[in-house]
Image (spheres, rainbow over the protein chains, first blue to last red):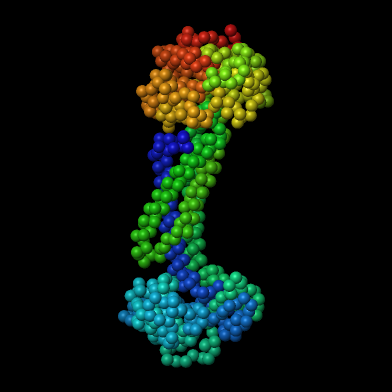
Length: 379
Length: 237
């Protein structure tokens, strides 16, 4: 690093410009990573927190609309319960509804219909305020409804049907589905709302047999045999993670953000590669002199890579620091933004790693510089 | 280091020390368009001698430096440095030989722009893997060539003559057996040219190094111990 560090300080304006570009890219990557995590949480945190390993949907359901189109019944539930490896199974209803708060304000909710004694129902330990479901007109909601000014004891009214639901408890943390707060509701009530039965009326008997999907949980160290269960119960089963694509807009949002991030990594690697290519060409004569003096290829290439590593690590650290600072400002806004250490560490490693790869591709030219060109007139 | 070597290995016959080229030819290019750059050159430069090689451009002076400096292998003939045959070395061994045994002084210094004068010398030591035990102290050597007061200046802050002095100190700091000098006065006025070549002569005698200086500047020959002329790749008197 003898030459590398002295060149860094000598050509600090040039390296500063390139480092600035990398730092700005790092800021963008932090922003996108935060937005990604935020959107994922907004889209599927309600599903993520379910003690579920797999969902069995009605046979032939396309996964991107599974939670709105699928229907299963109790008969299928019983056949699934009898399958090997299934520790527990329960009916699970899912519907997005528009409702009104106590003062007529609009409240959008994702109703999760669960039988209060089943394994998917909210437990006392998951509730931070109030209690669990014990009456048909009660809901247990995500902590994030506090943003809408709602709390325990408030009543929301389902639009058109007039069904009134009272908040019995508030869950620990964010539970959202498709950017909407989750409200757990007793399955029978969910079935009436899903069938569009106005409040106070009974639905047709078969309505009380139906739900969106069968929630499954595998025993410890067991994988559910989806194919066998699907044959027995005529269902289409996917893992919990695969079911995320059934959240409205989830696949499109995450793919878009991932694509932008991939482009940023590629741009960053190309910028660094292009810089070091120009830099190496500019230094061609100096490299020839150093090689004539007997510096080995390994010495010169190692020196150039160490130089690239210093620039990349410093500028990535600066960019991630600045991005995290900006992110802290954003997280107090309604924007879905969440910074997680894991994805940030991966992003930093990718920026440095790909930048080094770009630099390595360029400084390889050092090996092709002919030391003979050091003799004779300059340049 | 020259002295240490003399004590460690049995004394070599006097004619074997320094640089010796025996029947060296160099053909450049390939196929139809070959150029004979060196044609059967035989030359001995003992330690402590400053040899001037004169000749018009294209006469093979630079090729002579390249072959003597292990930058290019001759097509035929042999190159010996201090009695060791260095003719057919692989590129990595050539590089090792250059950094340990050979010093180059280039036209207009060819210093590295990012480095201060003293760092130019330290870099040469670093490249040669001598940073722990420098044979010569970089600052003392700069003092010796009259550049002690500008040891912390970068090349763009130095005049042409000053750069050439730093270049000479850089070539000498690793205590080479052979000093190869390429047109050292090309970019200098007469007064500076004399100073630089006088310095080269003094350093050559003080350090007991075999020095080959390629030049077309007849003015400075008075400082050299011996002069040979080259024409069409052949050595004259």
